[in-house]
Image (cartoon, rainbow, N blue to C red; front, side):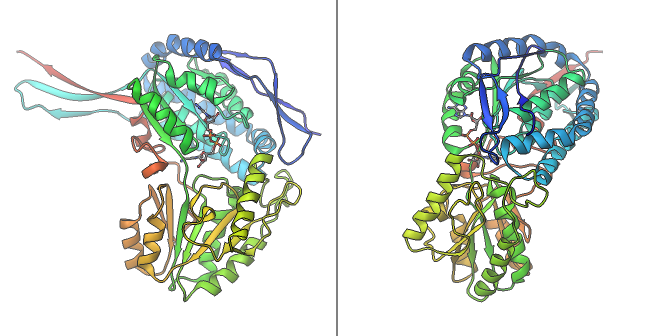
Amino acid sequence: MAQTALAQHLIGGEFLGGADKERENPARPGEVAVRYPSGTAADADAAISAAGDAQPAWAGLPAPARGAVLLRAAEILRSRQTEIAGDLVREEGKTIAEATGEVGRAIGVFQFFGAAGWSATGATYDSALADTTVRTNREPLGVVGLITPWNFPIAIPAWKTAPALISGNSVVIKPAELTPMSVTHLARALQEAGLPAGVFNVVHGPGRVVGQSLAEDRRVAGLSFTGSTAVGLGLQTTLNARRARAQLEMGGKNAVLVLDDADPRRAAAVVAAGAFSLTGQACTATSRVYVTPGIRDAFLKELAEAAARFTPGDGLDPATSMGVVVSRPQLEQDAAAVEAAVSAGATLHHGTGIPDGLGFGPVVATDLEHGSPLASEEIFGPIVAVIDVDDYESGLAAVNDTPYGLTAGICTTSLAYATDFAARVQAGVVKVNRPTSGLDLHVPFGGIKESSSNTFREQGHTATQFYTWEKTVYVGIDR
Ligand code: NAD
C-alpha cells in the first residue's frame, strides 16, 4: 500500500498545519491518499498578510530574475515528475499517463512564463505633445487570490500562478479539497527554487470559508477562479461589489457537429477522445454530438467501437486507459443522470451507466431530445449524448442553443462549413477535426457566455494582462 502523502499550508515561507483531514484514493476505497489541514479564515488572513509583506520586494526584482526562479521551479518539477504524477493519480483518479502529461503541462507553463521574464512589457508611443514621450507600463496588481478545481490539480494552479508571479504579484491559492497534494508539490518546487518567503502561499480548506475570505478581503486586488458556474457567479458578485478584478472560468456543455462529408472513423476518434479521455472530467470535454442523417449509423458504429477500446480502472495500473470518477457522489450523480435519461426514452448505444465497482465505463446515449437534461446540463463524466439533426444549419443552431460557451468542434472535410462554423459558433475555443479537449499552453484560453467572466484570457502571453494594471506615463523634456 502506498504511503499517505502529507499536504500542508504554506504561509509566509513556512509549511504549516496539522493533518486533520483525509482524502481517500478514489480507486482504492479505504486507502488514504493524502492527509491535509482544513484552513480557517484566520489562516487565509495570515496568508494574505504574508503575501502583502512580500510583494513589493518581489516586484522590485528585475523580471528576468523572477523568471529564473520560475525556470528553476520547472526543473525541480521535472526531476519529480514521476513522484508527483503518482500522487496526482492517488488523489484524483486519472490515469498515470494523463497525470504525467498534466505535470508536463505545469513544467511547460513555468518554462514559458520563466522565459517571458526576458520579454519587454509595455509600449512606447510618439506623443502628440512637443518634447514628450508617452509609454505604457504593466504593473502588478499586488496580492492576487487563486481558487482552483480538482480536475487539473496541478496544471490549473500552474497556469494561474506562473503569469501572476512573473508579473510581480504575490499569490494566495486555495486548491480544491479533493486534491490538496498537487499544489503542495508546486509549493515545494517554488520554495526550493528560491522564491522568497510569502510570495506564494497555500491555504487548504473549504471554499465557502477560505475561498470566500479571499474574495471578500480588500487586500486581495484580483481573484482568478476556475470551477463551477454556480460558485463562479457568486464570487463575481462579491468581487464586483468591492470592484476587485475578477477572472472566472466556469462550466461547459461542449458540442461537436458531425457532418455527412466527414470520415466516420475519424469523427468517432475525435468524439471519443474528447468525451472519454480524463474520464470525461475536463471542462472542455465533449458531452453533446449533433449528427446529420447520412453519416449517423456509420458514425455511431465507429463511436461504439472506439468507446469499447477504453479500459476503465485504477489509474496506477498501466493497462487502464480510463481513470475512475473522482468521488462517490460524482459517480452517483453520473449514474443517476444516465438512468433518468433512459427512463425518459434514451437508448444506450454503448455502456450501461451502472457503476461497476468504482469503474464507470463510457456511455453513448441516443434517442434524446436536444433539451433533455443529459444533453443540456453539465454532468462531468464519460457520457456523450448523440442527437440527430437534419443539416448543417440546424446542427449549428443546436450547438449554440446553450447558456455555456467554452469549446465546440466540427467534423467535416468541407472548408466552407469549417470556416462558417468557426465564425458563427458561440464558444471561446473552436476545434475543426480535433477533440474539444486538449489545449496548447502558449495560446489564449477561455470561454464566453456563462462559461466565463469574459474579462481576461488565461494562458499564452496575454495571460499576464489579468495580473497587471496598464499605466500610461508621459515624460516631457524641457531643453
Ligand atoms: P467547484 O466550483 O465546486 O469548486 C472550485 C473551487 O472553488 C474549489 O477550490 C472549491 O473549494 C471552491 N469553492 C467552492 N465554493 C466556494 C465558495 N462559496 N466561495 C469560494 N470558493 C468556493 O468546482 P469543482 O467541482 O472543483 O470543479 C469542476 C467544475 O470546474 C466544473 O464545472 C468544470 O467545468 C469547471 N472547470 C472549468 C474550467 C475552465 O477553464 N473553464 C477548467 C476546469 C474545470
